[in-house]
Length: 483
Image 1 (cartoon, rainbow, N blue to C red):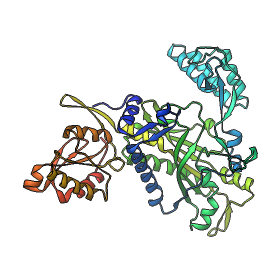
Image 2 (spheres, one colour; image 1 turned 45 degrees about the vertical axis):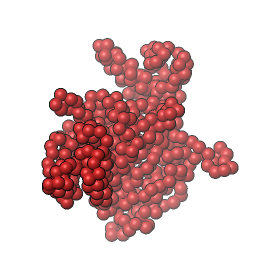
Image 3 (tube, helix red, strand yellow; image 1 turned 90 degrees about the horizontal axis):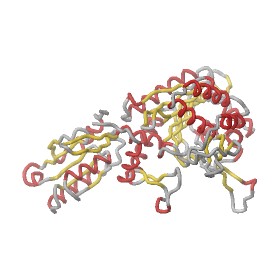
């Protein structure tokens, strides 16, 4: 058995089985934008549902909102996105391609290390780290590129523009008679929709600090360097929860949520050895953060962030209070004190989480001399949970199979399949991650009123009474563990 060692295998499987497609593919596609197909949309929905259940159903002090994508432009001034949500960009004049200047330098450092020039690479890394903490970032990055004669990755040319800051937000016009002053942004994150609704939730949901607000939804970033399939996209979906706490309790709450979120990833079947936490060093923290850590997954492209946990202090509410002129503090009636809550944020990319589930579930196995590709994912997440087959296309078998299919659809996602050999049908659903397959044969209608249930993970088969099918599937879903 082998696990995934190449992201291209997931890209190929996603296209072949209908998980994920390139957006507008018939027109040549749109870079870093993807569509979810019949299996992908079910998988994504199931992951979202598990997250929502974990956050809101299992916590009596977390409620949900669904904020609009369009927000007042001042929201993004208050949050710092208008002034500071930038990447340092540089253009190759020969190829007309645009790159992030810091990534060009990082690639050059990696090449130096590969060539055995560790001392030179270390010195250059120190220069890059120093540049990242200075206000003259663009000038410093340009100087590093020029002094080291770093060439463009694709053209090989040494013919660069100046480095300048490029804002990552998409801007558009608002209203039928819009002007430049009427510009609004597609939100680059969902968190601000929570912060601007903090007071509304506080006044209507009968919550008291500590409490949380959860939200899922689309966000948009005009990433210049967008690659690695759905890991980094220009249109993506986030699942975020902002937890409002009393100052002084924030660090304990931060540590608690970091462990809770790590446990959730394991609870949806992600193997423990492929997960780790990576705290941000103090000199790398965002200006508003007191503490931050990434939950990282070992993708085929290396250890990468799938979720971030942040202690955002009172930065967001204080900023929105200042820019809006509305009071956003909290009055604690029990202790008769007033304060601005601190915020502990949990922020996970749903697309990255979907990619993580696909990568972690992927297996290649040899079965009787043939290769089997199978997705061994948590049955709760599987886009098709049960396959129902008549052994062959005979009306008497089809009738029973259709009845089982109809009965199971009340509770599970089911796929009826009567095309091809039984072995090929098993293989198709193995690649879809389907944990249980039910086969109706002639013994079912002539002898015992039983069907064969075949288990995805070990391919074992058991005869069970027709009336017990739903119970057996239900028990199999509850008792599953990753292997």
